[in-house]
Image (cartoon, rainbow, N blue to C red; front, side, top):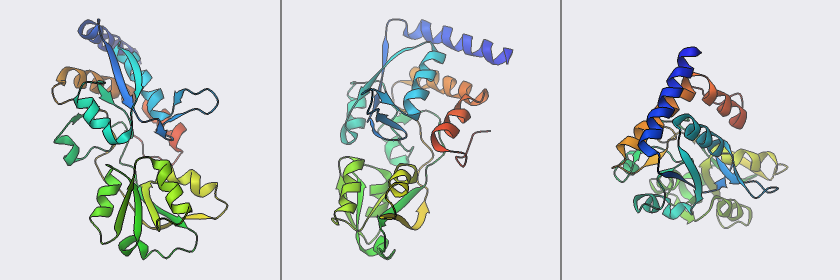
Length: 245
């Protein structure tokens, strides 16, 4: 424990020297519980990534602030310099690596699941109309099948599309969909097999920002090493969430 404490202190000291004059801006969507969302009571950002991001900034000795941004433009606005990193439940994929870089993963790859109205035949997965949030790995998965992809700007829009019969099913992170299934009184169910795309969830960083990426990687390593990350994962995603060794 003493060794970890000294390592964290050294990390904060080096980061403070590098970024003493800067505020590091973290971009998120604020619409994707339990990863990131707005608390209805306080109107403030909360969620697994908000809590983790605050801890990472503290460990790194950085002054950080959160910026909310629509999902469709979250990568272009990072590249344009409107914020310095993305924490928004973003899967690490080869296609995204062509545009931005990533830190190491702070969450294992999330299973994606199909959700539909009760009684829907799972054959719609390959031949029906499937909703997905635009510019997501799920949209790409649907596009690679014979199903018809219907994209929506927000995750809540995809849920509405299922409920009003506009689409046959939605494909999204199972963790996002699970509360809707649990609270629907049997109206909504999972169908078919879950799939697990990507290489985990990480922070998106501009390709030129090697120093900032290294700083956050060190902070992520520190929360993995002392168990802080595993505690957050279990609290926000449940006892079945895969943890880090």
